[in-house]
Length: 321
Image (cartoon, rainbow, N blue to C red; front, side, top):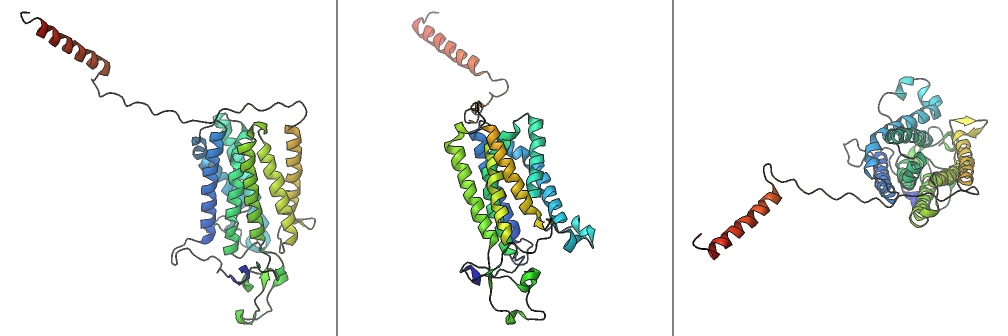
């Protein structure tokens, strides 16, 4: 029963070493993203080396964007009194929408440099991105974040008093032993599960129906899928910090990207549009044969051997010569 599981926030994988479970979740998610992106690049006729070549650029912009979104989101309670915390380590806190926006900018820079199609590049990273999001969300579990209202359901999770939003705060002065065991909706788990389901759907589309897809279709699918998931789950979340007109900003963005995704799909499949001529699946070029040793001519040496053999035969046939 998840309601009885209580992970100490910031707990370390190896006691005494500053390696938190939150960071492990992100690293595993990133590894899955890179591996799947290589497969998707090959499926579309592109070299998987592009994934590794673009990694540093895209990762840097994703971190900057994610950090910037988080700082704006948490400006009031965390950074307004001490702005230097926003730029000084430790850099705890990343906003997903900011990270995605930064990653898209990094991808745009790389593909302009390499003269690759932008929409095709976005499609390549969509399945892995959804899986990475689903895996990384477990970092919220270890940090006791992203939870909903109290629940009696068996999969509720416990939240320490120090990590509860004001709406569900413990009584002032109460000790941990005085607080009854209470479960909360694990919004992180709901989002994680739905992200992974979305990743499976994206993999099915790209593996079985690629010929019918247009570049950008999977990117539009991500906009619709994740925008819907985030928009719905925000109804169950309390303690928002960044709101516009009383609505959480994440929910507003979710609704907006769903609209963009639907419009994108309609435009891609407008009447008269033609199938996209995808390249054949990428095949690595064969390894070059090793060059002969300096001063060694394989063809000339073979010819010399043949001449020596012929001369020996002539000598045996004509002893007097």
